[in-house]
Each structure stands twice: as structure tokens, then as C-alpha cells.
Amino acid sequence: MYFTKNWKSSLPKQVFSIGLSLLALNYPVHALAEEAQESTIEQHQQAPVTGRAIFAKYGIDDDLPKLGLSSLAQGEHLVEHVSRTTKVGDQERRSEVFLVQNTDEKGNIDLRIKYDPSKVDENEDIINEIEANTKIEYRLRKYAQSYDPNSVTATELGNGQVEIAFNYSKFGLPQDIAYFRFMRVKIIAENNQPVRMVIKNTRDFAYQNFRINDYQQVVDFEVHDEGVRIKQKHIQAIGMNKKAQPVSVTTLVEPVVFYDDETHSKVLNEARLSQVSDPRYKEESVKLDRVFPLMSDMVRQQGIDVPLPFGISMAYRNQDMNFGFTDFDIMGIKLNELFDPYKSVAQVNAETLTLRGEMNILPFWNVFGYYGKLNVDAQVDAEYTGEIGRQLQDALNNKLPGLGNALCDELSALCNSGTLSVPLDLHYDLAGIGTTLSVGYKQLFASVTTTYTKTKMEGSDKWSDGILTIQPMLGYQLADYRAQIFVGAEYQGLKPNMEGTIAGVELGGEEFFYNVGVDLNKWAYLIGFNKQFGKNYNLSVLYNKGETRNSFTVNFGYHF
Image (tube, helix red, strand yellow):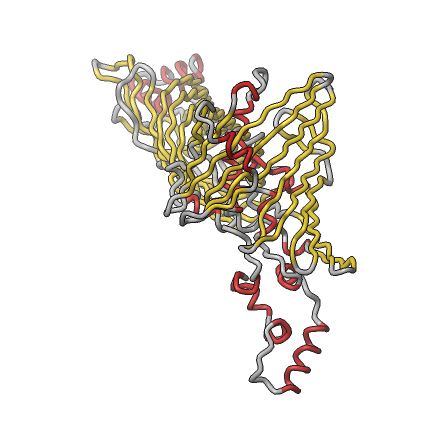
């Protein structure tokens, strides 16, 4: 695939929607009257040319910025030579390899790294690094929103030259190359053909294990019969490592040969082609395509980053609940006359620690399962009515006047109302499943997460009925910081009664069981944030506040 010289025939449909005035200027319609043409041209001259139209005006294909992100975009069958020099302090390492790319009819790329072991520094893991970088370029070869249309400017330099400048789009950039949002790009075009593209950083950024202060990528183009292709790509990054040593990484990428879908080829360097054909060269295959998430290529073509397919995470949640009661039933006996449920309250603290495994089936659909421990520390303040003491007082007074009164004087707590505090310390196993659906547009996103959890008291073999939790959220992405903030709500489908048994406790030969009515609010507000660290790690913090509960959750995850 070359960038065609006939840019007019390759423009996306969106360019043609800018209006009849631009069509009239660039595509004269002879059927129009001369007077109508002059009027249309005058209207166009008054309207500013922006975004894609600037590329179109100077004959530049607006796919060209992709070559700064991925050289795999320039052809389907090709061989490239990559050489790299890394200087750390006084030490210098040099390595070079060949990239051999072949594309099948379905668009799947077979990529191999071929190299002479004597030309690869033994102290540098360049094969794995190039494999990792190539996987990134593969994901970006169809990156749709490669530049920010609002940032495009054009400066005419004279002698048929023009400088087109722009920024890469910050939306959808994968974490692997998120530093491209700090770049300013300039394309020099001459007589409606690109000559050079220069990419420079506007601020420091993290790159591999270094902190880069000065980054420059220069892509030289050459024009041939089929269109425009890369002549060479030269990248230099200067900065410091974690030990504050000066670091310089220089990479040079040069095409060796291009092949078409037939039997033709265009050899650019005969000597290098002879080298890569040497059967003594070692070969490493790079697996680029992954099954999950499904439909990922289609999503990437829209300029949207796709999450890594698998993940594991550890979550800690601490929840405080304060609620009242509506009914007391112990061992099938109603105790509402003895303990007033509407004046009784409970203070409950629940801590959970869970391990979660997840998978992204679709870019917008995640499923997960988790297992962990739940510890409940509760203080139940039951309002004793004194009814049993008063009934006993009346019965004794009927037998012997004054006897019941004497009893109540000695045992006042039995005859008077008061608060009976009951501490509880309970431990459970918990397990559950869940799913998340999400949708986003640029910096805005929405999601809903649903979980279903069951608990089992330690020492028991009986699992409780499940609890349904739903979290709808709206969020905003801070693209420059690879972070998201969000607000929403949380629904906990707690039943209006708590029932269960206490293992090991028996009354009258029967296992102790209870059924207590509770007064709970199922909804709570939610606020939180998520921060990505590199391409694999993320930290989420969430806070809930409701009428009868509040909680905070911390989740640290690894994705691969």
C-alpha cells in the first residue's frame, strides 16, 4: 500500500462534506455558469481552510501522519532494516536486525525478525524490545484519529514549499505510546508532494526505562511512480535513566525492498537484501494477532484504544452501615414485644479482600470473577421494652401483694426499658461474578458494572442467597495524565431481612437460626478515579456515600 499521488481520488468522504464552495474551487464543474463559479470561488476565499482541508489543499494524503506512529502502514509486503545505538553514561551498545513483513488476504500480518547474532549486543535485549515496539506499531497501523484536526496549520515558505504543522490526537492513544500527545509535527511539502516530516516533543516524558528531555523523529520521503514512501526514519531520544545517568537512544529504519500482491518487487538496497536472504541468520516470529478482545481491529480503525485482554487485580473494601430494624424472629419466636425493633439500631463494619480475574471479550464488554474474605464487626443495640419484667411483676403481686414490686426494686433492669448491646464478630468466604459494559466519546465515557455475590460463614457449608450490585457511572478522561474521574451511584440489592444460622450454636438440640427485618437504603452516591501506570498497571479508588452506608474501595490491577 503506497500513499498515492492522486490524492483527490483517495480523500475520505468527510472532506467532500465541507460544502459546494470547496468543490467548486478544487473540482471545476463545467456545467455551472461562469458567473456562478466566480461567486462560489469568492465565497470559498472568505472561508478559512482548516483541518483535513489543509492537507487536501496542498496535495498531502491525511493518512501520512500515521507513518510517524507506524512504519507498517506504508506497505503490506516489505523488508526493513533497523539499527539502534544506545549510550548510557560512557557505555555504548549497537545492534541491528531486519523486519520481514507479509500480509495475507484477510489483512493479518506475518512478521519475523531476522538477525546476525554477532550484530546484536549480548547485553541488550533488543529482540524483545523490537518485538514489543512492533506490536505497538501493528496496533497503530490503522489508527484513524492520528492527528488533531483543530491543531493543523499551514505556512507557505515560497518556492513551492509549504510547512504543515499539527499535534497528534490525545484521544485513543494507547498507553504504550501515550507520549505522542506531547509531540508537535511539521511536514515540509514541495509542489504538492511531502518531502520530510519532523516530530519533536514539547515536554519531558517517560520512554521505556528513561526520562526523555529531547525527542526528534525525522522521516524522509521519496516520490516514485506508485506514490510516496519512506526513504528513511531517524529517531533520537536524549534523557536520563533512573540512576541519573545521561542516555541517548538513536534508531534508524530503512526500507530494503517492497513487494506487491503480484510478482513484482522494488529493491532499494541490494546489499541488505542479500544479507537478509542469508540462511545462517536467526529468525524470531512475532505473534501480532490476538483472539481477544473480539472486533478489536474494527474499533482501532475508529481511532479508539483497545484494552489488553486479560487482567488480575486485588481489591480492598471497607464499608460502614448504620440501620434500624423492623422485626425480631429468633428460632421462630417473635420477640418484638420484648425488644422494640423500631428503637433498635445496628452499627456494622464490613471489610472485604478479594482477588479478581477478568477478560475483555469485546472492547466494550468485560467479564470477571472473584473470590475473597469478608469480616463483619457489628454492634447491635437492641431496645429492651421491660415487658417481661412487668408481666412477672404483675403475676407476683397477684400472688402476694408487694412481692413483684420488691423483685423489680432488686432487678430494675428486668422491669424497666433499656438498651441491650450485643457485639458480633463474624467471618465469611465470598465469591462472585460480574460484567462491565462501557461506551465513550473522546473524553467522555459511561459504564455500568453488575456483580452477583454469595457468602458462606466460616465453618459452614451453606452459601447464602446472592446479593446483586449495580454501579452506573459517567466519567471524564484526563488524556494528558492517562487518568479518569467518574461519578455515579451504587445499588446494593440487600433484602429487607437478614436471615441465617450460626454454626456450632444450638438451642434445644436445634441449630440457632434468626430472621431479622432491617430498614436499609439500597442506593448510594459514588465518586472515584482511575490512574494508569505504564501499559499494564492501574489503580482505582472509589468512595460511596448513602443514607445508611458509606464505603471506600481500592483496587490495584495488572493487565496483559
